[in-house]
Image (tube, rainbow, N blue to C red; front, top):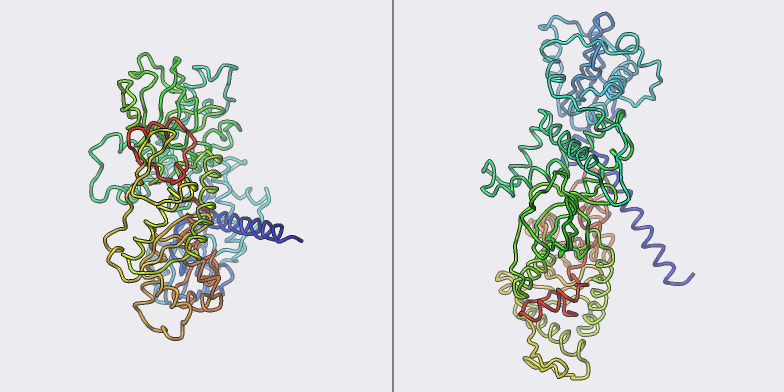
Length: 606
C-alpha cells in the first residue's frame, strides 16, 4: 500500500472520528456538557438507594416519583410529576451531591403535603416517566426543560403501544384544566394549514402565495420563541452579548440578535428554538416545511451587491463568500429604496431552491464611482480576514483555493527557515516575519528579480509595488519567548511562551507542581486566540507525557483528556474543522479595484 493511500485512510478515519464525536456532543444537553460531575452522577448504573411513588397514583391518575442512586459525588436524586390523565410528563427536576438528611427532608415535605410515598419498582417508574414523555410528544404537549437530563437515573425501556394505555381516556388526553395547566393552552395556536400543505414552487420562482406562507411560518416560529420556556435562555444569551445593557442602541443590531437567537442559538437543553418548534408540530408538518425550517439554521451573513431587482426577487452577489444568490422578500416590495449597484448588509436563509431575507437589512447607497465601490470591496476584504468562517461558508471552491495557497506557503516557510517552527524574542521574530514576507512578495512571486528592495517597479503595468507593513502586538513584540509556527492547513500563527509550553511536556518530571506552568497550559487551553495546533504538536512529539500531564491538569465530561481529539472537543470544538488564516480572493474585479485604490489584500499571492 502506498504512503499516499495510508495517509488518505488515516485522514478519512480522523474525519469519521471527529464527526462521531461532534454528533455525540450535539446529542448531549449543554447542562451536562458544562457540569461533568452532574453527568457522571446521572446514570442508572449507580446502585439504587430508593424508588418512591405516591400510594394513590393509579386512582388519582397523577404520579409523583422519586429515584435516588448512590453516585460517586454523593446521592443523586431525580423527581418526576406524571399526569396520566392529561399531559404526560408535567415536570422533572433533581440534584446531586446530597446526603441522607436531604432525602429525609424530602420525605417530610411530602408528608406535609398529605400524600404518602411508598416503595416503587424502578421498572414501573421508568415506564411511567418515559411513557409520559412519549404521550406528551404524541399530543404535542410542552415537555419540561429537564426531560433529557433527569430520566438518565432511570433504566431506559422500550415502550409498546400498550404502555400508553395507562394514559388518558379512550386513547385521548382528559383536558380538565386547573390553574397550573392553563399556561400551556393560553398561547395562540399555530394554524396547522400553514405547516401541513406542500410549498408550491413555479418554474420562474416562488409565487406570492408561497412567500406569504413562508412569512406566516416565520411569524409562528418567532411567536413560539417568545414562550416562557425560552425566557431564561434568551436572557442568558442577551447578557452574554450585551452585558448589563438591556439592548443596544442600534435597532438593527437588536433585531439581528433576536434573529440569531431564534435561528441559531444553542439552548441550555442542547437544542435550538427551531428544533423545539419542529419537534412540537412534527405530526402536522409536511416534509418540505420541515426541511425549510431546519434549513434556516444555515444562515448566510453577508455584504451583498445588488445586481438586479424584479418585484420581490433580488439577485445579489455576496462580497464575503463570493457567491451569487436569488433572494426573495417575503412581503410585497413597492419601492425597495435601492437600485442595482447599491449594497446591503443582511442575513439570508435557504427557502427551497432560493433564499429569503431574515432579520434587519442595512442599505448602503452608492454614487456609482469606482472609488466608492473599492471602499465597499475593502470592507468586505476586512470582514473576510477577521472572520474566515464567513468567507468560506457555502463556497467550497474558495476554501480549497485558500487551503492550496496555505500549503504552498507552508512549503516556502519550511524551505526558507528549515523548519515549521521558529523561536526567538519578539523583536527577532518580527524581523524574521518581515524577511519571510519580503521573500513571499519578491522572490516567490517574482523569482526572476531575485531582489528584496524596499519597493520595486513592475515593468508590465508601470506600478510601484510596496509591501504592506507587518507588525506584532505590543505584548508579543516585547516578549523574550515568541514562536512563529506554520501549519499546512491553518497557516501562520504566533505564540508567546511556546518554548516553555513545549518543555512542560518534554520534561514533566521537572515541572511537576509548578502552578505557573499549569496556568500556562490551561491558558492556552481556554484561550479562543490559541488554536489546537500547539496541543496536537506536543501530543505527537511526547504522547506518553501528554496523556499523563493533561489527565492530571483537567477533567472532561466526555472522553479522555489524554486524547487530543477528546480534549479539543471539550475545550475548542470549533477547531475540529480547520479553516486557513489566509483568505484567497476569486474575484479579479474586487482584487483589481482594491489594488488600484491602495487597499491591502490579505494574501501575498494577491
